[in-house]
Length: 305
Image 1 (cartoon, rainbow, N blue to C red):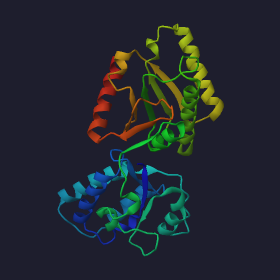
Image 2: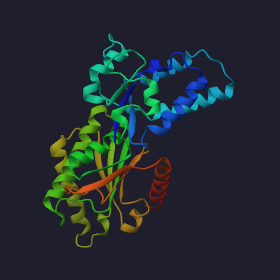
Image 3: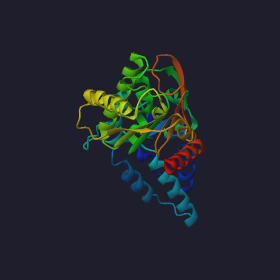
Image 4: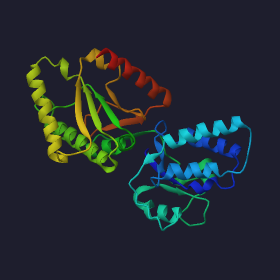
């Protein structure tokens, strides 16, 4: 889960548009948020490099093929995962990728020769050991560190991130102290991840806190402010990404699903929500159809607010 691959734009060299259409179909089917593994946006000019490589292809099939390839290329580029890996302009793409591979990449794909490289054909055939057991779901200990690592790709790729968690543990509630501290630590980690590329501007927690009758509205506001203040104490006040809460009654929250973390890019479901109690929990990326359904429910929820 969350495997990251560096893919050399040079693999397009010598390919026809017909071959490229076939290869992009397979890549799009196996990588992206619906699959839980990703192609890295490396370097940041990656989209331009791929577009240039596409334009340089010599084959001239019919116009329909060109449009199909363009559509699949756009889908491929939209699914790229941003990375902060350094890129030295004086070095080749391969050398740059190999320099960063230990810290960032599970595999480097290129048709160049090298002991630490894998070919494009190996990628398409599934013949890479580091990716052989990759999947869109995993079982792991429910801790703030593990959960932030799982959510990391969504934070880096999204402008807004939504956490739908009915029982999110606020400060001053009857949640266990260590669960409250883990929740604060999780939010702090997510905001720090957002600071890496300054793309995600809002992290919004959608909670059932409004239904809690043991607290007055004023008390609820105070507990939210306390929770936000605790996160800011950890992250600093002047962060690019801000934290917000949507308080809804349970029947409104059920319209979405109270155990999702999602954005316009993708959706992750969490067994038992985001309670970080250290127990082994299942997490998984939702399929594209399930993500589309979640966005539809979210729009319905926003309309009914």
